[in-house]
Image 1 (cartoon, rainbow, N blue to C red):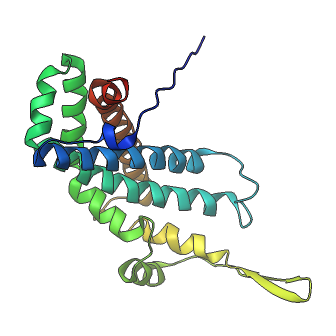
Image 2 (image 1 turned 180 degrees about the vertical axis):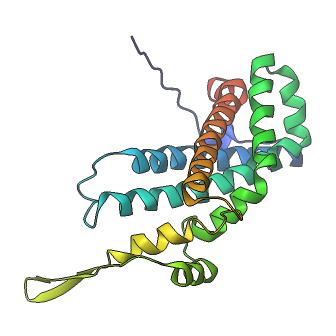
Length: 218
């Protein structure tokens, strides 16, 4: 049986700091708390088979949107984890963490450090925004037909740009290595994203269980 408890405390007290290093630590922790909930929404949005209110073009367009947002958030998580890991106040509190918690945190930091260049490049291409270089790559490498749908709505008209998904799908492969097939790249890229999501969630939960949760109880 799943049980839960709710703790309530003034946030000013939860994130209160007596020195500058602790203030910096709390800033990054607050940032990670927001990003944690963002990640869960975005990842769920990319996995659902049907969200009727959002699937007004098609399933894949909605899924790709949430994938792109997930990449953008993962990039911010990586930055916050690194800043927090370098913080002197954070290093002090980690001495009181359990061995498994420290191991989980270190694994997340190592993962994002090793994948930093790929995550940044992939995020910069399509992660929530669609910048010039991604658009240029998409139109230069598009090799499929696209469609557009016009329809009447009352006295006015509307349009669905079904080809937008096709442009994103092409831009998504801009980081494909020479000699690598599209299928191999996408498997590698999405495996990386899934692992990044798991490491991010685990690291933030460790931070909550080992430190921030106590601030609500204390």
